[in-house]
Amino acid sequence: MSKSAHGGTGHFWVQRLTAVALIPLTIWFCFSIASVPQLSHASLTEWMRSPFSAALMILVITVGLYHGKLGLQVILEDYVSDRNLRMISIGAITLVFVMFGVVGVVSVLKLSLGA
Image 1 (cartoon, rainbow, N blue to C red):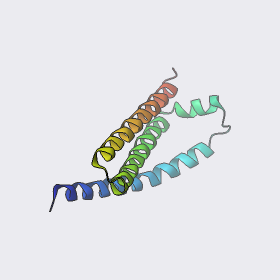
Image 2: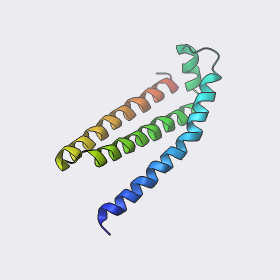
Image 3: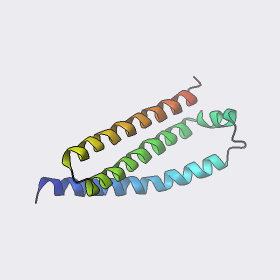
């Protein structure tokens, strides 16, 4: 069996694991946002100041972005036949998703710490 076959299996299971993890996180997020009295900046900031909400929000961001990156990577691997273009594209989406993740996590931390 080739090395790529092992990587594909691991990729498959990580994508399934992130999908399963997103189920309770998404349910929490929907019910949590629905429980905020008003969707104003002040009330959302107050909601985000809870360490529990901030921690779970960081999980939603990181797991959701990682799951999306894995999905786009599969699409690129399946449909882009030029190896160099595929590798550049995978690198580019990885960079974009890391940047989104950093911005998201920093934003949550900034809100939750009151900066």
